[in-house]
Length: 564
Image (cartoon, rainbow, N blue to C red; front, side, top):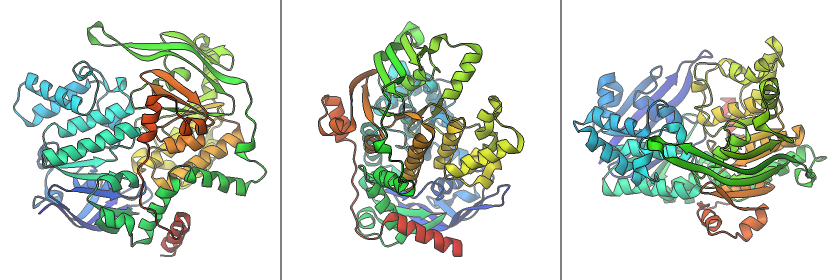
């Protein structure tokens, strides 16, 4: 029996450049109790499809039918939809930071949702919230109930969102890229949790993802989308082992291609072919250190006078011109360490030396100059881009703030950056909401490289990108490092990417660096049990299909699209 029936759904979104045809005559059913997956590249219309059906894109023009238990959601009023959202249909959004209010504790926000739909006491709602936080593996849930969103890592914020979505026992859970920001071990826990909800509570799960490995491991049936079109739908095992549509084949080839080191390796080989004079692997790395971290510790004060240690006596050096990888589970302190190195957070003790100078001593005009040298690409592209400003002004901010360029020159340089990161320079005047999650991350990369900094901190730079775009962005980062002499601190939970992109890798656990070494020795002979655990949880294999390469198929499809 179908719980959700979509018939001939069309979604158009008006923009200043004309309407975007985001969803084009899509039809499918989701059966009661099944795990249904929707996959496709960033910008394929996956998220727009479900969000417009739930009335979450007010400007969208929709036609067709979206029937939930026989009732057409597209004909319901705002109040009728509000009563269904959360209680009968819940959503886990791709971006937890923009979904959680920064001024309220995470516990209060879960309690508010429960009391908005059910007549229960505050104490009962709090008890349920703490139980849910424990279930999604938030450590010391009773204490963390009173914490604010900024006190959680990206992965932990996503787990809070999942707890919130489960708070009312909905019949249908829509999960929009729920594991994108999570490391491999936590990713497995979240997928197990969703499967547990499906099994124990009889819930139906509709999950959106660009990660085919994840989808192949959990979904009963899968629908593939490309540029708003439904390309193929079928049983998961059959679709991944014997795809019929050329685009599905391209996705599977790209996913298999990018796992391990093959995708990044090919990207570098392609770059070397274009410019054979320069070989990244052959460039000697200078011995001098651009960053020296000396015995830093950091603790945060919590309510009731308690302290939580986030960084514990860390010492680390980053060599000029290298890419140092930083890996570990969500909540281990990776991002906090990166922000401390960037000077955004001061440590409780210890020193951070940048270019021979203690950053805690840099003040005034010298600090302004320091900001040119260190830039950050944040894990969350939604929260780091102002939704009320156009992307041209966002990317142009570094030029404006530092007085580097103005007027037409600034616009030209911003458009060059947009093109450099794989975006259309003519979309200079669009707002962030008019881009997909992956496209927003590329906007963040463009802003970060605008002033050609010496150190770029990359906090999960490709976690929001689909497999066909990941290799392009990694190749771009490689080109920029070679051409501009950049140093990278590369934070990721994707060990396959880290293995090939990085010259050295540091493994973090519980606020400490427990292992540091070159990639090959780390992967072939890990010394610490936790490192072995990360490696064991790192890969989800897809059935491999011989035949045409992904790049050939995608190029052919692009040519056909252009000819229409």
